[in-house]
Structures are given as structure tokens and as C-alpha cells.
Image (cartoon, rainbow, N blue to C red; front, side, top):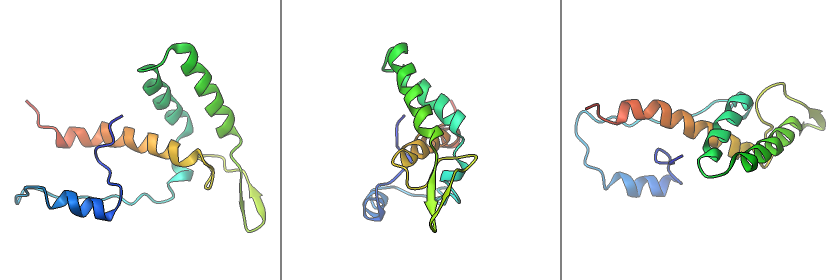
Length: 122
């Protein structure tokens, strides 16, 4: 998926904004996602991941990667104030895979929903 709706940091955003030609019809929007990791739908994100992987990999390799991801995501534990928790949905905060899974899901949502507003209809 193309990651064209994100910025790396505020400096990059500032540099990109000065290059834009903006008129009165333009609007800038920003989204702050509340409780991101616990709200990532794992099954849907795995389907999105599988679909993306199949574009550049054979079915067997994709199947193996998805199986590994399912195993990792099933071990969804985290520690908070000396207690171990196993959330019943989402991905664990602090897990190395959580950011990647969140990014996959958010890019899918951005591309699916933002494109309908940003790309002119012919």
C-alpha cells in the first residue's frame, strides 16, 4: 500500500506544506486515534495483510507468513504495574509487531476511505 497520507514528523510536514498551492476550498484534517492498539481488529488486519502479501508472493509463502503472524498475535500479553494482562481484542502495547499491524490497518483505512474524497471523479 502506498503511504501517501502520512508524514514522518512535523519538520517534514512543514517542508511539504510550503510547497502546496492552497485555495479557499482546501481543508487540512488531522486524526488522533484514541486507544489505537486495543482497537485494531486482528482478523481484519490479517486479511488485509494476506491480500497485500499475495500481490508479491506465492500462496505458500503468504500462508506461512500469516500462520506466523497468527501465532505471534495469539501471544498477546503485556505487563502494567507488575501485573500481566491478556487483552481480548487488539494488539498488545509494547509488542514489536503492534506498530506494524496498526500501520497496516490504518493505511488500508486511509486508502479505502480518503481516496474517495481526494481523487476527482471523472
